[in-house]
Image 1 (cartoon, rainbow, N blue to C red):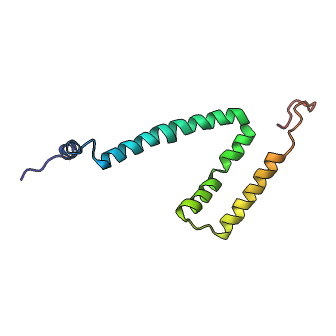
Image 2: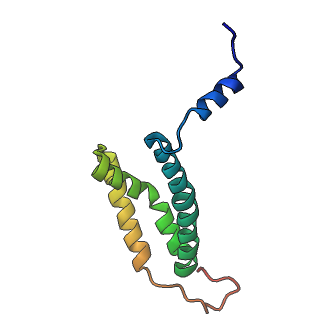
Length: 116
């Protein structure tokens, strides 16, 4: 028997896949979802949102990403959350509340650089 090169094997494998097979359609759908929604649309929403709310508030939302990931994985995937995770999440929510309710700094503070 003759041995074929890895490229020939790959080419033969690709040529035998039907574009309408369920696995191929799933692969195409996942690729489109990942490319268009996850990478393009989500980035567009993030940049637009950052321009609307400003950098300080956008950073609070951006920094909370691990908290939301933990909460969603707990809710939908049944992930376990330990005491440290609960304590950290609660402390983060308290910090987020304090940042959101803080008074705006005076932009006309009378010095060269104001804390903004």
